Image 1: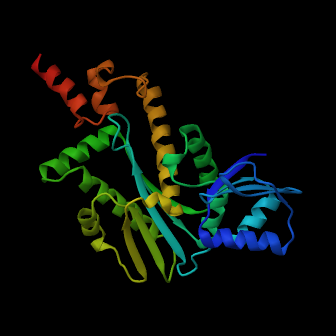
Image 2 (image 1 turned 90 degrees about the vertical axis):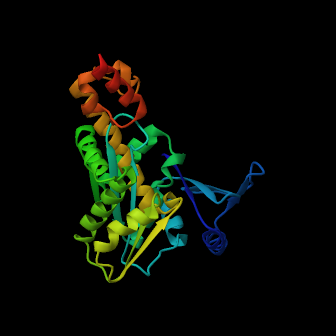
Image 3 (image 1 turned 60 degrees about the horizontal axis):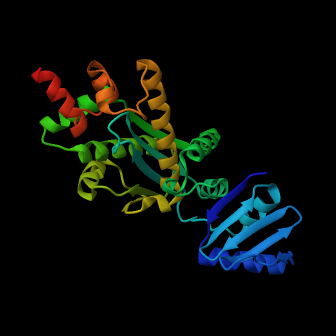
Length: 285
């Protein structure tokens, strides 16, 4: 069986220790200074580290124990999270994803191992994303493939706008799409912060009755944002695979100068300096 890791807070740590003592679950000696607690009792097998990280064997008994101590934010019917990926790569799409999760779905995703995607290696992100997508919860995405992205970027540039304006537009759009398909009395939206003013401007058209919107630096610490990020990274890699197959290239392992110039607008973000340089050179020849 696979091992899964998740972070728990101080209150959850206290609840875990109290539950273990109350149910007289046998503890094992810790094996190093980094461990706070070690349990191997029947099917329950877990290690709690002093950082708050738990590594547990994924089975029904372990999940049931942890499910009991994990906190639910039951103030809100849904908590939404949005994030993007692809803005830093010269190739491939810009992907923006928003999720809408109930308190119970957040617990399910924590137990699945969802966390800040920057702490997860790419193969595990792909594997985790496929499991997440199989779950029955609401999410929306915008995938701007290079041709569409380049046309949109040029249009925004003519209007005196920037990449942050595109991102603010895309975040607002996926959030509005997902709000249109959920019913709630109270909901919270968490956006991984990148440009407060531009995002706030785009969200002014959203009916904010019963809605709390937060733009948060380090938003991936929140499960709805982390989930959106994992899905976005999966969709980015999937789209790059499609572009590679369609144009017979390997965008992950080449430089722009190794791509046929006539394919750059189909595979690359042409405002990137290394791509623009090639296009200028081509036009001057």
